[in-house]
Amino acid sequence: MIRICECQGVPVLADRAYTGAGFWVTTGLKRPPGGGLTLTQRTVNRALAAAQAPVERGMARLKSWQIFRRSRISPNRMTDITKAVLTLEGQR
Image: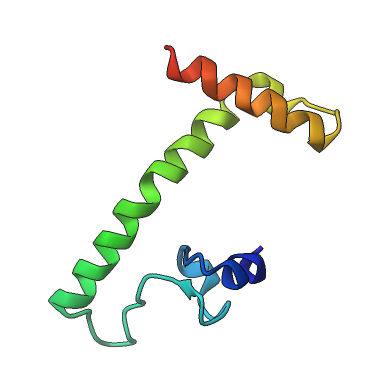
């Protein structure tokens, strides 16, 4: 997936678990051992977290639907079901 985004020129924002995944992946900055982050580094981390929050929230909402937890159907069909669920969520 990261390679596809890189080929298409789409930047990838990821959490710190993906540190070292590649040049195209932007992750938060880790605190150095025995030190702290500068004000600028903390600001960058906050901006990345703010950009990731809507995606995390959306994934959590999708996971709350029973159909996604117990599904045993083809992933291709789940795409259509996901679109329907997102439509229903938008009308709530």
